[in-house]
Image (cartoon, rainbow, N blue to C red; front, side):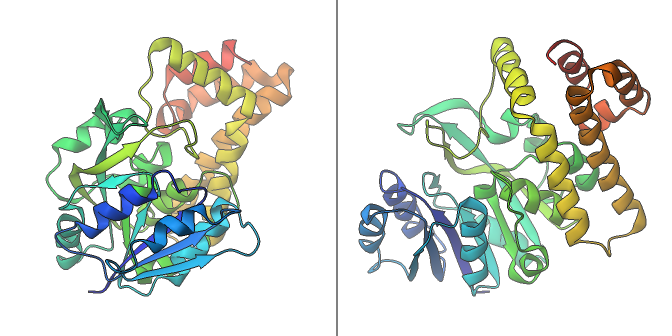
Length: 316
């Protein structure tokens, strides 16, 4: 099978060289690396060009800045491989990553994700993994293979980041384009592929996820109680519930031919987020809506249970 890597770059000159070195050093080297660059200058391109003698790099500089979602759509759509790996410009792959994940595709998988070690900006490990930061530490005990209950679990929270994913190109074409929502490519692809029961797991860390001040999302953070409180306040202030509702609406619109019960669960997930939006917009209805979402157990099916109840009661 031909292997592609897709990178959506933006001001990546500081770290993209480390990522490309780690791809060069794979025990199974990908057949092509497609890089779409949204940068306003030549700095990222200058770093990328250094690796053209080591990798089959297809580099595309955007004449107009596309934004994260459209840039990922472009990079993914330009990949010609049978399997497409997503890569971030600032992470590092361990040498066995491609080989281990391709074992699952050789066994018939349609989509595969792995775990990753979280590091600081200098590449120092912080003592926990991405699965652990997302509340999915138990997945590390899985044997490689199918992730059971993946659809219902994904409607609560998807465990993997985009850079930990690889998908068969045939499946990817069914899921594209990624919606025009900030920081959504991994959540969208994760839930949409889970709707087909497509995901298999490699439960090991196959690379590092570098956390620094310029990450496009807040994924990969492990928070203290005060950190969780700060994040809960920010979630209310930023109205992330509207973002979630739009994400699930996009998946429903993209995949209208899913089985009826799957569409129903996606709608329930969307409606839970819309109820939480209304709690902030219509204070007089807040308590009634909170009781409603407790009774129908949506806080527990789609969120963090009583933590979200407390968030809605006291932080709005």
